[in-house]
Length: 287
Image 1 (spheres, rainbow, N blue to C red):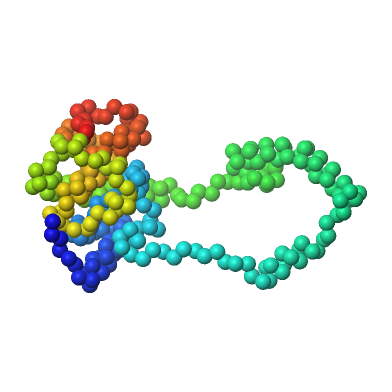
Image 2: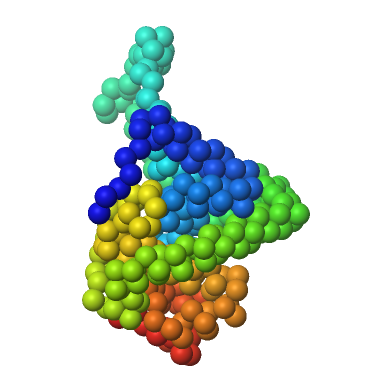
């Protein structure tokens, strides 16, 4: 199947726009980001990868890897700093400052005896104190009678704000997936492939992450049948998880017809939500 060949300048422009969409997504301007992803025909595996594992499953990618995932430069790896000459000399000076006690000397014997007694007497008590400290919130090793008020890293309002942002991001992903789904289905039907034949195609779980992220960012008609099937599997599986999280009432229409959902991921998501291993009533397995 012939595909449009982009010039180097066109390809760079496309990468720049995709990276800008990533910055929009990080700034919680989810709709703008999704509009760009749709316009650029971005591989849906990469779009779903921006979400946590309860949405993206194994496709989930941490934020510090989003830029290279979308064609940008990889962040530099921190290099271990070798010890300076001064630090080495300081360490050697500490070692030479006090010579070791001769073996069998009185001081060595007393020191060893005191160390052994302290380990017998104080260690269990210290261990119990540390365990209690971890329960009551007192810092380990702090004097008894001192308590640490747990310092909340985020306020309640911040928690609600983050939850609202996540909900909006999932709603926006559902819009993206709902846009892709009928178009992918139409491209498959043009090749006489329907979701009723899903059992004849390799499962999504059989594809490696490298293979899924390498799917091309091109218009749907330019994809091969195998690539279109992968798109359909990614889209339907992610849509199911989105519905399960924020719109469970929409699961019925999706589950009552043949679909491209990955059964293993669907059942795992259901178990995680304590719905049980039995899929929703009327669910049609894709295999």
